[in-house]
Length: 366
Length: 76
Length: 185
Image 1 (spheres, rainbow over the protein chains, first blue to last red):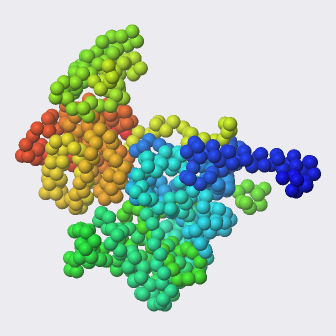
Image 2: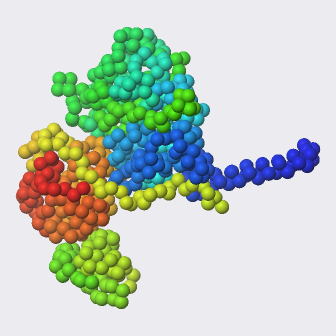
Image 3: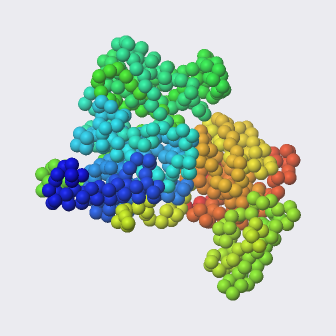
């Protein structure tokens, strides 16, 4: 190396020293792999001092239990959530969002039941509202479901690492996912409140306007609906509903559905005078399939048939069809999403709790 | 150490319903409890050792670590 | 090396949780979907079917979901638990007709309660000792279940139906707000 670069001797020593430190960092990551602490991607080594940095940005007691699986007798404290958030690559100021995500998840019946262990291998979807999106850089626009945004990627990953490391639910052991879904690695979106024609999800769910809040549910998958073909709102609704009502999504009594609505679709529907509740009602009312369709797919379902037409309602009540407006306003496409479990969404948003702002901070949090 | 004979009798009856017998002998450190299987016993019907130990603790009036538990499936 | 690196799996004693709590009950079974979680003991499924038949006649239940767990000793597998949580409002578990299956049935009852589903567990009275011991080990001493006389396995079809009819009031009591007596928390 020296022959090529011709560096001075003192630079040489620094090079060697830095190289050694980088190799040591790599070994620390390998150590974490060897211990079984990772989800398959590298983690950040965490020390006591790092944990304290994280705990300093939450008003919550380090011993408070934020997550549990009662039937396994396992639970997770604020401190354990902080350790795993740091490992996941979070910045300390993300921790309050991670904790609010756990508040939201623990309100879901499927989460406190056997949801984490299900054969469907569902992913926790974390939805963030409020100005905190801008503060922390939580993406709510272009590529919102994709890679490239540290806050989105690491906040949701912090949840997944707790499931693995603290709750002890690992694939092919206590987790029995048949195939699983990639969102289980990480799935966190901001709502695009700036371009949504409607009130934010957290406001719909009862929090004051402008609140920093998190809603969550377990998700089986997302399926795209690309409709740049029409400006007729009914056409778009029928296109969305066709995906909502596909037979493959039916298990048990019916299927579940929600929308990650693109901005263009949301604005088109709103311009036609529809509220979110109108869209929910429209889809709930029109997502029907004939019993013959289901029979053809080998699914004999008696319950829930319409007495007149013999059709089946494919989704639960309108208010169990969550609608989140997210993504860029650059093409008319949306996602149908599939919450795990039926009619079990809590319909709650949970405030992000941060330490009271002191006078000396001049009102600035960051 | 005081044995609750009534509790022990109840346990014997429970085991007998699955065709198991129970013998208790004193040992230096506490009790040795041996369970043997009759011809009609079913392999899966004996409760796990932690459950048996918990029952025996209250019946024999000694802590769990004072009970040496021998099951029919244990190597001789 | 790496002793300073925090172990993300470490924490307070995981086994020492709060005592499992019972699920919320409604006053009536009308319109509810009833899950039947049978083990493979002789007459277990027939007993639960007879219970469901009587529930349908007397309580206008909406639907019945039948699941069988193949191991009489292991707790309910996660996929079956998830299915029951997703599709049912209450669950009847049985029949605890041997030492370990009674213990296992009681664990399933406690697990279902923790997952938010009211459960009624049926055990034969010869195995009260193991059922109670298991409830104690799982932090629910005094857990209430339905006792039916031993044996169950050798009964004929009519006798099984008669047993189910006799046990019915107690089963309904355990599944609804009409649950009698104090309940251990």
